[in-house]
Image 1 (spheres, rainbow, N blue to C red):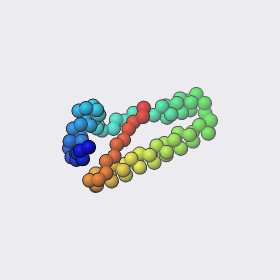
Image 2 (cartoon, rainbow, N blue to C red):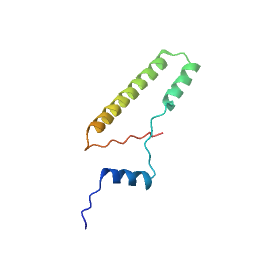
Image 3 (cartoon, rainbow, N blue to C red):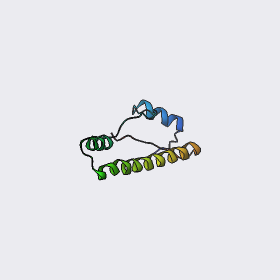
Image 4 (cartoon, one colour):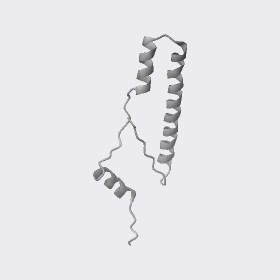
Length: 88
């Protein structure tokens, strides 16, 4: 078996052309959980419902912060590649 070395630019070309995957900036959209909680709050005025969006947004913000930290590390390192996915 041949020991084939592949450059990063070659890897990117294969990744984009064969697998048809692209990198693009994030778009601002709404979360299904947030939408459902906002609908429930419009229908019912309960104090416990007001806390749920806040805690949900805190978790989302923490995940976003972790993603940004990972992306920063990837831009500063030649040995690290970070892939992010929107599981929507």
